[in-house]
Length: 225
Image (cartoon, rainbow, N blue to C red):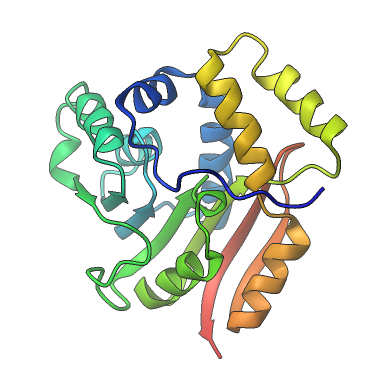
């Protein structure tokens, strides 16, 4: 199935952001955190960057688990960051280690080589130019930094897409069903992601399917050729 870019890169409609924030993404979030634990079995510490943090569920969960971790979390949608601030208010003591910022990818404001861990969940399919994400990661990650990028994988056919929507969004709101369908159409395949990394000369990341609808690029970034 051919890729169809999403109509809009940003999820900045307040109703859309609220629907997304209220949805149950716990399964995917737990998968992401489990993959991160596998990459860093000794535990996360230092400074991490979350690109496209959404309502900040993953950064908040990580900060509660790892007391020596600090996270800079960015998102291009003010409405989504407002949802993140509301979430953050429910977790006293976490906010001082989480810095939220409204920035779009690519961002020139992020420090070069400033992060021990760079992560992103479900951002790449929103972007018109995938290289914007990968080169921002290469710019921000310290040498040998832990990198985890997870996203939806585009199904092979419309029938497979319909099956995923019915399986995972059967009782979801119309907004979420529409967005999930659009996201699956806009998603990249494992082979496409491998080609993106090879074209940019990014080394140290393995790309593979990690669920029936997600791929992950993970490892420790060696650098860019």
